[in-house]
Amino acid sequence: MFRIILIFITLCTLSTYSEGANIVFLSPVASPSHHNWNRNIYYALAGKGHNVTVLSPDVDREITKNVHYIKIEGMYEALYNGSDQFNFVEMTKVTKFQNTKDFWEFCTITADVAAASKGLQTLLNYPETFKVDLLMIDLTVGPYMLGFLDKFNYPPTVAVTAFSYPHYMFHSFGGHRQPAYMPHYEADFPNEMSLYQRLFNQILTWYDDYLYLGHFLKDQDKLMRQIFKNDNLPYVLDLTKKIGLLLSNTHFAVEKMQPLPTNVITVGGLQIRPPKPLDNELKTFIEAGKKGTVLFSLGTNMKSSLLDKSIVQMFLNVFNELPQFNFIWKYETDLDLKIPKNVKLQGWVRQNDILAHPNVKGFISHCGLLGTQEAIWHGVPIIGIPFFADQLRNILSIIRAGVGVKVDYNTISHDSLKAALVEALENPKYLENAKKRSRLFQDQADAPLDRAVFWIEWAMRHKDDMDSIASPVKDIGWFVGNGYDVLLIIFVVSFISFQIIKCAIQSILSKICSKKSVTKSKKKTN
Image (cartoon, rainbow, N blue to C red; front, side, top):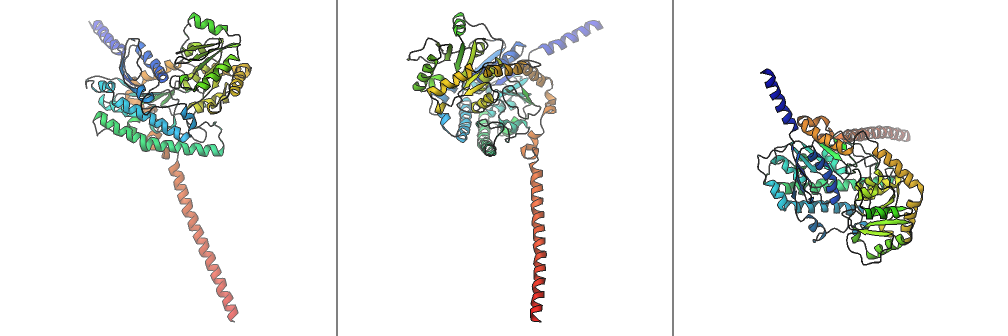
């Protein structure tokens, strides 16, 4: 009888731990590439039996077991077809300060669209009895969605970002931000900055803080209270500090590492999967390149079809003058120009699978972080044409590592483009450096995606002890955390002491001079 009871208790325990958790994944970022990065995470969680509800402007057509999508409708139409549409080509012509402001405007528009969407309302209408074991959020944009923490009774929370580790997240997770050697994501500066660059970088960082803390977060907090109809919610920045840990898309093989707190887990490259076989036609074209094949893709937000027709024609002319190479160009619309025989246009490309082919010898890229990671993982040299945001910083990492060259879009010419291609494709040092970086990137104790899943499940197992890995700086703030209060006291005390000593010396000198004057006056009188 005792044995039967013991078996029953054991079975009950096993069923409790084998039952999948209910996870709500908030993914408000309007970017197909970021969606792809996030998707790898929740697909892996679904594969382990967890039930994942995803709120996102991107929805996969294929039905995946344990994944339920709620679509934020109208996001891309508002960004690229409406009155506030973004033109990424034009962003190359404005200042770094304007680009920083544009970034927060981009985030504000996505928040406003999501707030008015039927999708967000659907999740808001979930019953209070709906049990959420874990809340996940892409914190790159949209902290207003953390109002769901209160709705779902404050479950353990994990944030993710495919945007490396932007400096504004230090306000939420702590750690030590170092503008002296960590360039702002809009700054095309090396880590070893000159005095002028460090000064500029510091001012740009302060300006970003002003926009983020002084405007964006205040607007987000107001929006959150309107959506959730609860004036008793904590301030939105305080809600971000309730997040247990952050999964950050960064790795030292791709970019210079910055000091990260324990609660920031690096999972750079988790979107890179073993390559799938290519279709015969594409495979034949890739292998037909005598010296190799080059992939040309400007990503999912910055489309090649946005380029000026004269620039497009220039690319085609240069490609035609390099017949020993074949070129696969991700071009999203029909093109009424003569296409050289060594050029293949495709509206969509399986980027990771193509870069993995051994005959792919170059990657013409906008230097988005995900594409940069995939090229370095597979050891492919990069010809970078950055447009905005972290692309400006990524190209410097590419050049520093010796795995690629830069082409400036605003000064691009036939000769400069051809010279860059010939340099990157014909000079063996770029391929050698790319292969070296590839070995560094791939040599990891565990796969980045497995690491991400481990820490997500760790957060659920230790939901009451999440503060054990938190940085103290997130609570005491950057001013105290960096010892600036102590330096301020030392400065004030030193200044006051200096003034006291100065006054004392002046008083003594004044008395001495006064005595001398009196003595001289007496001598003259005598």
